[in-house]
Structure formats: structure tokens, C-alpha cells
Length: 103
Image (tube, rainbow, N blue to C red; front, top):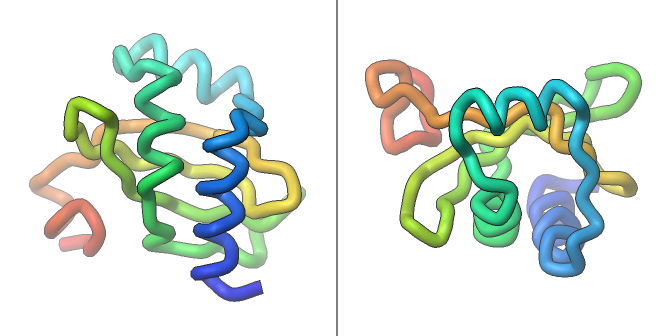
């Protein structure tokens, strides 16, 4: 499966609301005041910027996307067939160029 196919599947799953959240992801969303709908928005328009094929128990990826309020967020999630959001955060602009490239 290539990156474009993974992005398309994640976008489709987000549109259908077939996304699962780990306990850690929920805790981080609350702590960082990131709305679940913002996560769905970001997954629907997001891009995979890093792919971790060797992650266990399943491959995962780092995505960047924007909420409906145009706020950039990073989402670490599992790759298809089941999409689990592992963590969510706002990227630090001192560590990222255009929120996609590490400084």
C-alpha cells in the first residue's frame, strides 16, 4: 500500500466516522483542547508526512491536517484497515517548517 492510498483510505474512514481513539489520544485531546470534530476535519483533508511501517502492533503514520478553524494539528494514527488515533497535538512552529518538514 502506498502513501496516497493510505491517505485516501484514512480520509474515507474519517468521512464515515469509522475512526477509533486510544485512551491516550482522548486524554491528549482534552489536555490540549483539541475537539474531536477538529480531528475528523484534519483527517479528511490531511496528508501523511511520515510513515512508520515497522511500528508494532501495526504500521502507523504522522499526518498533518487543518481543523475547520484552520488550526494545524498533527495526528499519529494507525494505517488501514482499522484507523486508531494514537495521539494528537498542535505542531510547534519552532520545530516544523510549514508543519510538514522537521527543522
